[in-house]
Length: 171
Image (tube, rainbow, N blue to C red; front, side, top):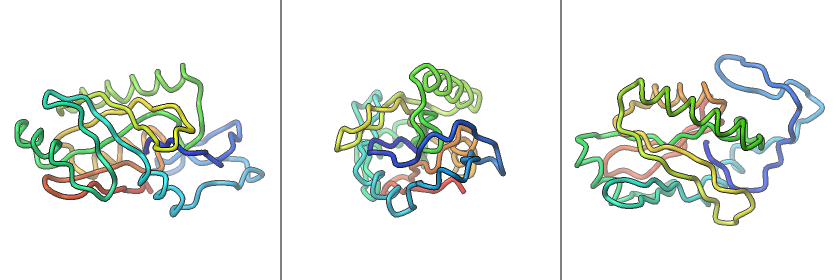
């Protein structure tokens, strides 16, 4: 998630289990989840921001970001991913849980050795508070998706130099 800043309709079912690397709601009494179309709409109305040495980058799904391309050139990278550990499964978690998960994500990415920049996903409608996130440069699609799955995200945002940002479901 990816980071989402819209009214979430997924209710907290109280318990998660890990199945094929994805977090899923265990209790079928809570079937009210966002459809893929709703999730895509949420991501399209979110600004994925990162604070970098070339300035504050703002990424939008479906758009090319020239400032991000400049950063990729400076760092000698061709690919990037925007990932968060906040609110796995699009379910609102406590601040303490989110911060702890985000710290674990940041530690995992540091171990991979990629350039990382802090940021936040900010929804246009302001219904959710911004979610801490990271912009990771030079990471391949499979590794980025693995991180998304590991931290329970339904989707992440990926891209390549001079190409539009793409929403990728972590399924």
